[in-house]
Every structure is written in structure tokens, then in C-alpha cells.
Length: 285
Image 1: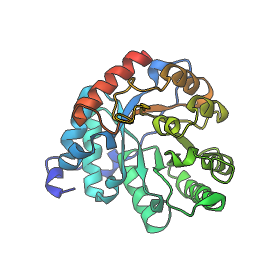
Image 2: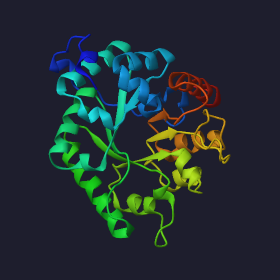
Image 3: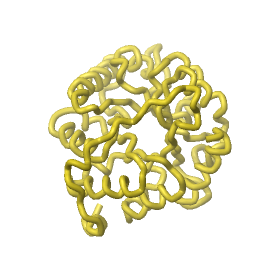
């Protein structure tokens, strides 16, 4: 990310950069649950023009976003500049996606600083790179728990995001079950719908089995058509979105939705726009 992309806006004073808490919403008030965009969906555009891309996402009608791992390379000044833009646009950084090694040592401290500036509520581990097997997953759980304790005084929370691997039975158990059982209740289990389905699991059943833990959801569709897979718009795959919304909003603990698609027959920005339109039509928000 080049510095000249950030020089167009002045920095805010630190006092204006303190993070606000993401308000919880009653399960019955579906229309009040915000929908954001996982910025990996527009990764090429974001790398070329971060400020312009965030502005375009806000103009589409997204109420927030989730930055992914490259945000970690931002300086404090760049993070302040981005926060000013978010405030000007009236949208939120709900959370960030992070490599697993961002949850300890100096990297955790840097991620903490940038997330506090951005106003994020959750730091999400995007995937695990630890040892395989049950013991390896127990170590991941321990890392999440330790980070959660270190961050809670600042109002930051920790989450874990699944891919297919976590829902694939290994040694007689799905790794995601090890994580759910061995992490603090405050650790969010961010559900990626598409990869859960791809792994052969039922995302609705998973939400119901973990009340209050599914506080955000990647609304990524998936098609069994080998020529399409994840390259479909929201609603064009096999996900049962009506049931997913109902489960998330009636016990799942959902605080915000995140649209994510890995690509489609349209450009990144057009895909993000069309997916939001389809989401709102399906959800009724």
C-alpha cells in the first residue's frame, strides 16, 4: 500500500479516534442488524486505491466493512486517515481479519493499536497455521483465549473464522468443535457459510448448536457446479439464507452480517453491489 494514496486527507486528533462499541440488536429487530462487506471481495481495487474503494463501498449502501490481513501493514498515520474517511462516510470497521501470528507478541500490540484507531470491535483470526490434530487445535484455542484476555481491557474482542478445514472430520472430530468447546464464550465463532457447506456441514445446525457465539457471518454463497463453486453472486448458490437468517437472529447472537464473494462473472465492485442488492431483497432489511 503506497503512502501517496493516503496523503489526500488530513489526520484526526487522537481524541476523535476512540473506538465506539458496536451495539447489540434485539433478535426480533432484523432490520437493525447492519450489513457490511468483507473487503477481500474487492481486494484488487482496494490495493490500488484504498480510500476510493472504501468510498465506493459506502456509496453502495454498505453500513460497515471488515478489513483483511494487508491492513496490518498500515502505519498509525494511515490508520488514522482511514478512520477519518470512515467517520466522514458514516460507516464502521466492524472487525478485521488477521493472520494467526498476529495474536501474540509485538504483532498483537500493533494489531491492537491499529484496530483501536479504526474503531473495530473484533479481531478475527482468519485461519490457523498451527500444528494439525486435536493438540494443534487446542493450542489455537489457547492462543485465542490468551489474546482475548489481553485485549478485553481495551474493549476489543477476539473471533475465529472457519474455512473447509475446520468443518472436516479429523481424528473423529471436527476441529471447529474443539475450538467452540475450548474457547471463552466471549470468543466469536464467525461463520463462513460457503466453506461450511462446501465441507459437507449444515451451517444452520451449527448456529443452533452454538447459541450466542455466531456474532457475525460471512454471507458467501457456494454452488456444487464445479465450473462455478464460489464464483456466484449471493443467492445463486445452495445456501438456505432464509433459515440462516432466522437461526442467526433467534439465538445465534448475530451482531452484523458481512457479504463476501470470491468473484463472479462481474467486476469486483459490480459483484459487491449486486450481492448487497440480493442480500437486502432476501433479508428484507
